[in-house]
Length: 66
Image (cartoon, rainbow, N blue to C red; front, side, top):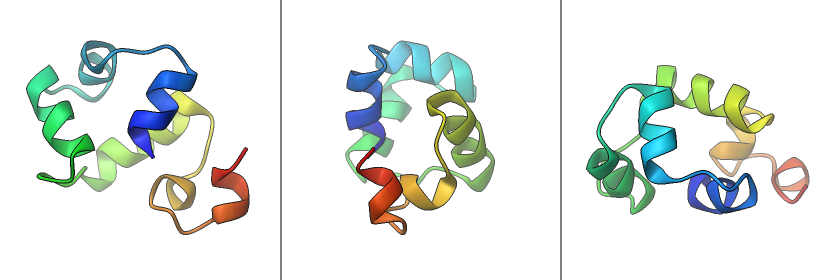
């Protein structure tokens, strides 16, 4: 979901890394599912992308589709 939102918002992994305070390679691993986003990172991403943490986690399919 994060990778799709990054594309929609025309943001790079470097942009997201700066927003959540980690490296670009960590964002790559997080998007690939190798490392999990922390709850604090999910809150930042929800604000950044204008969505909810539930949508980022795939729990709210209706909002995630928007």
